[in-house]
Image 1 (cartoon, rainbow, N blue to C red):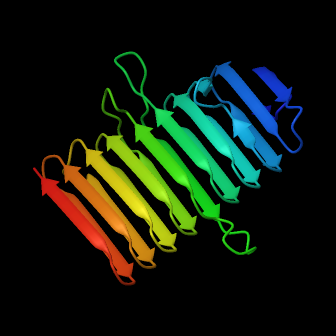
Image 2: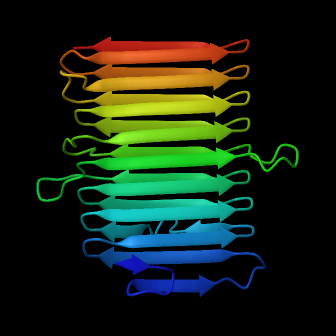
Length: 233
């Protein structure tokens, strides 16, 4: 099923009276969703702090492209075989993706790919805040998170519970902070965290726990890096 903004969804599209604002709130349930959202302008929103976009169902594809400053994406996705692709160009972005597995709902085979880039207009691409949580109340198998950031003063928090959960972060810019916590079943080839950072004054806190198979690969280029890595079996 291929669904655009005005498709077979329970979807409310609100045009704010403020110029350049695009607000989208979604509640969806059902398998095989393929949803693409494209927003261009200031103050783009897909969900917010009080009304998340809620997508539930197996074999889901969810793609969001936002261009402009002060973008907000806050979405809850639940189901097996989920593919989330987010592309953002602009500054002061707030991105929250949750896939909260429970006893009755799974988040197995969850792939999240987020790219945030500088528009090339001088400082545009800074001040990004990213939170990714997968299976915080129950474990999830075969999750994969890829995050690419270009800009300064970025903060990313990634929390994954489950086995076979590789995390890859690539960042270019100064004064960036990354907190990565992967907790779950190791062995064989269960845990893998790769962090590549270019820029000064980076703060990196990586925690990996589980039974064996913990692999952490950190490459940083720039002055003033503060790196803490904790691995426990």
